[in-house]
Image (tube, rainbow, N blue to C red; front, side):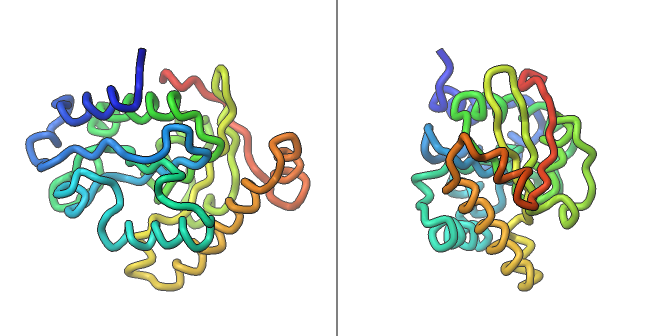
Length: 216
């Protein structure tokens, strides 16, 4: 029987791509195994590599504040992970073969948690899930702040792209955009599941639907 602990154990021992040679610690992710919200970032940075935990650097502190102050939740209420579980050298972008090697871990986490909403942080995790959902990827600035429906075999998950918190560290106006996006998520969470489609498609938020097989 698959569990999040088993996934984490496998991630920590993983040698499926070159990144294991450079890491201090793999970063499987952490949080509530029944979370309604799951955050998917790009890859661990220096601080995450040292501590073995996701989003613990400056960008992570901003993410934590957004979770606390805008969503009214704690990190223990959500699940936080990355598309790639090991730090790329010099914080470079993950390469395609690294994403291919690592993505099955993310799929298993999604399958086990089955969150109501996945918030993709930045273009890499957004682009990856859009590819699975058969949705055309544009710039993160164009696709952010909207809900996209991921229809799996036995579940439906809303995917909500926004900027990576690190972007706000270099471009302060993005902080306001992140706050705006997180408020949209809070509003969606407060709506009853039976009326969620009306919230998405009947009140000005034009979500897009995608169909996928999570085993791809």
